[in-house]
Each structure stands twice: as structure tokens, then as C-alpha cells.
Image (cartoon, rainbow, N blue to C red; front, side):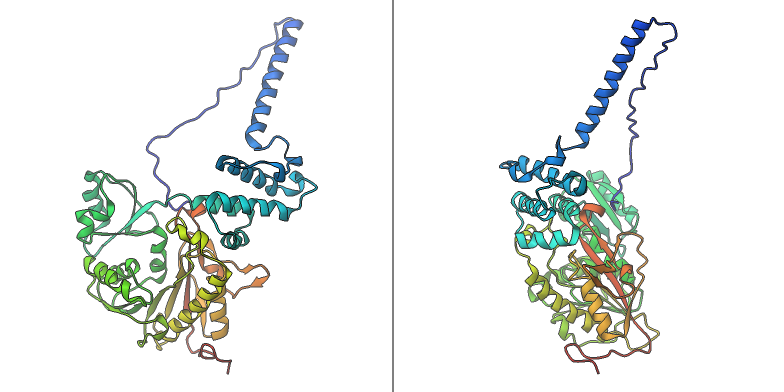
Length: 436
């Protein structure tokens, strides 16, 4: 179900005309036969029309995609649809001379050719989703996601911002699951250059990137760390939920991105934030109540925003990013508040849909440390994290994590998991060392 359900402004009723009921009680037998034949023909035509609409290929039981010429984009789309149809009911629809693997290879080839994916990247996504959902995901990544803005409640309320933007030709609707957010359906002015934007009244932000902060639930007067903060969308969100109280350390490993982070914090009126520039694994501070780790990743969930991902990701990238993510999550748990009465929460998130960067990272860290657990985030949206994948059983509670997909929720692909340090428990070992 999409996370964006626009209110209906008019109810459209599409009624099929009622069938004519024939009163045959007073007709002659010849007339009755003729009328009955006409009615039978009409019903047969209707049935044939329905079959034509339902099936992309007239005779799917003998369909051979190897002899199905696909030279133009439109022909490729049709062949993809026909192969999908066969795979959706393989035993009944398959050509007996062609294996399932062969059908899938043809599907992958056509998707790569049509949408510009490298075979290695397509293989990762195909292994995650399966053939049918793989095509749905790829096709959804060809479409832009809805434009959303987060209202800066440090400066004004959501309804007050709407009152300023609507007269300028901006068509808005509230997002039900986030009290600070609005969806922009239409705008006659550039959303990133209005006077209201420059005054720090709002932040353009993809809806999925609101979720990690909502899961973390920052409170006033706490000590919080945003471990990979640039460009500052989530940091400014944390500040406003803290109401500029307590302290927020905004760290980013990239010196080039620090200026943009500082600019956004200033524009949004965040006065409780301190910006620092460390590799996340070397942060020298500790005793944080809550930590947000929106980890660096392959970006396999934001292909609609960065088309380069299509041709630049393979299993080596997954392994490289996984190692970085494990180290950062381990470090985050190390520098939480030692006081068992403190919240001691880490929200781990990525904009990737791969299991290797999400469930597998969380599973490894929790099992190897032994001093933390996954807790419920209170989010009623999204799909649960995978309990198992390709024969690997993940740690208890991983289904409390949430996955978000463009083809299901109409947001960028995202993974969010909330982890809490257990009271009275110690970590089994340091990262990279054997268990004690």
C-alpha cells in the first residue's frame, strides 16, 4: 500500500450497463430460438474479450521467448510481460522444452537492456525480489517519487506553512503518519527556492528519510549523536523534536559536506547542534542517550534519484559496505550512555534494499556483541525485516525492523531498525578480536 493516499475530490462511479432480461413467455418458438442464439453469441463475445485482456499471449502453454523477436523497447516490454506471465504460473504455462532458469535469464537480459542495468546489479535485485517483484521494483525506479517537505516546527506549525504556500499555487496534503510533513502534488513555484524555504520554514526531504528519526524518538534535554549527518535533513529534524534543548552532535566523515550541513542547521534555526568532522569509527565522544546511524551504503533503494547505481554495484560493493556498516554500528553501541536508566538506543538505517547491508549487518553485530537487542519502533507502516533469507536464519526480533519499497509504499527504498543496549550486560569482545 502506498504511503501517499490522496483524498478523493470527486467520486467517480463506473457502472456496467445492466444486462437486458428477456421475457420469452409470449414469443413463438422460432423467435425464441433466434433470441436465445443472439444472447449466447453475446455472452461468448464477452468471455473472449475478457480472455484477451487477461492474457498477454494467446497461447502461453507453448510460448518460447527464444523465438520471440524483441528489437525495439516496446517489443522488449511485451516480451518481459509474457515471460512474467509464464513465471507467475510456471507449471501450467511453461514451454516443456525450456527450464525456469532459462526464462529468468531472458527476463534479466531484457531488463538490463531496456532499463540500463549492469548484469551484476540486476542479479542482486533479482535474488532479493524474485522475477515478478523484481520487474515491479525496476519499473517503479523509473518514476520520480512524490515531493515531500518537512515543516520546521521550531518556526511555525504545519497549517501555518500551508496557508503561506497554497496561495502561491502549491497543492499540498498532510502525511498522516508524520505530523511535520506535507506532500506536494503540484507547485507553480520552485519548492527549493521560495522565501519560506530560505527563511527555514521547511526542508524538502524524501518521505522515507523521515522514518529513522521518527523511530529514534528524540526527547528534550538529551545528548544525541547523528553519526553520518550531512546534508542535515535528519539532524534538523532531531533538533526540532528536541525543541533546541539538550545537545546534538552532528558528525560527518566528509569535510566537503560539512559546509552544507552547517548551512542547513543555520537556516533551520538549530541552536543546540555542534558540527564535527570525524571518521565515524574514530568519534572521541561517548555517553549518548540516543544515536542515529544512517549508514553509508550502496544506494540500491534510491535508484530513481541516482541512476548511476544501475551500473556500478556488485557483490564486491556489498561486502565492502557491509564491513564499514558493521564497524560503525559496533562503534555506535560502544559509545552509548553507561547509565542503565538512559534510553541507550541506536537507530540503524540505510537507503539500500539489500539484505547484506541490513538484516545481515544487524544480525552479526547483535550475535557477536551479546549485549543488545532489537526493539519495537512503533511504526505501523512498512514491511517487516526478513526473519530468514536463502537458508540463513537471522537474530530474534529482526521482524521488528521495517523495510520500505518504491513499488509498494511509493517512497525511496529504505531499511530502519531500532537497537537497544541491555542493562547489566557487557559486550563479549572488541570488534575484530576473538570472543573472551
